[in-house]
Length: 461
Image (tube, rainbow, N blue to C red; front, side, top):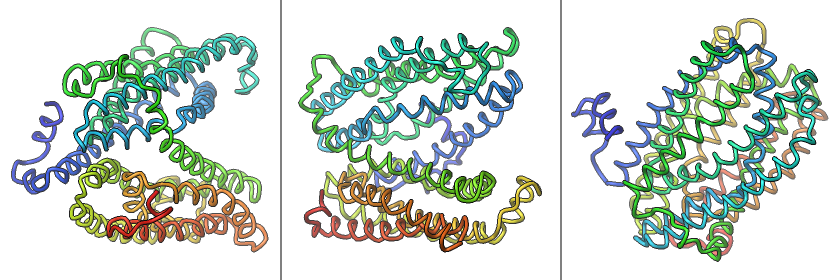
């Protein structure tokens, strides 16, 4: 009701009918895209208010300590070993086939496995935490040792609980309700902002309380949403202890571990670019690269909002053998991609002026860096619809192998182009482009093979 109310409030009825009429699946995708843009806008505004509020409440140094600790804890997200994405695909397949009992088994088993994994992690953290010197790891004053130990314990525990209750996000993705995921994030951000503001009024600068609020609010929201949805709208797929069947975890993890490797490869590549730049050309080159990358990543953010609801929509269409819808949707996405390419070229042309307005004269970003990142983003946007389709139908074995190959090839190429060919920062980005272009072609070929019924071997695995 809330989502419908927001849509009716913001869109005139005549425009709404043009946007949302048509195929039921297309209507659902369009609604999710629109509402996701709306919630994303609120999230950005909330973050713009939250960051300075928190920095002013603490100070730049304490805020940096919190960000560093949060980043360290974030690496433990790998411990879900791709189970979330495995559930997303398997659940979407079960629901599309109207196998709701199987859907409940998948959900129940996923909750059981993820709870087991993260309860073990919580136990280990509680045992090992007294032995850890967080003040040394975070380069903080030794006088903060006790507070940081408490903060790490609370943050780690909440992080683990967030992963358990966060499975509702994968359920919502599978049920093609990605807009609700964004609504959950919006609610968490607004409540966090409100709590931090109240904190500034009643308690002097406390890193521990900031950590408690940032960590616990998302857990609280996810728990409430999970209970409400499973007892009402999604009662037909509500998890149950009696439906936990560990033998089904093989299906979930069999697909999930491939997504896990792909995700790890992407993070390694993103992190290694900064490390290579810092080692070859110094820390200032990292700043220059990231300014240009953040600028052009606005396009990838928009692309992500569009592609997210399509993932499970492609799953649904593939299970129902609705090739006509798949091909028609891909044609529309290709037209959207052409628009992205035009915008990217315009962004590159005016990049220097934008940088001056954004960051002033403090950092100079050469046009060559903007151009090479623009080219990289263009190929990423071209491949995104096909990559989303491949992920949605779960035929990711080829992507799994290319992810491993990309890690092996990209780093040596980056050093070769950047240092020995003396291409500088653009050379490092060009190395990534050398793997992005072939992958773009592969996903297009795989899409054609699958939709024409000619996919065999690795193309269909």
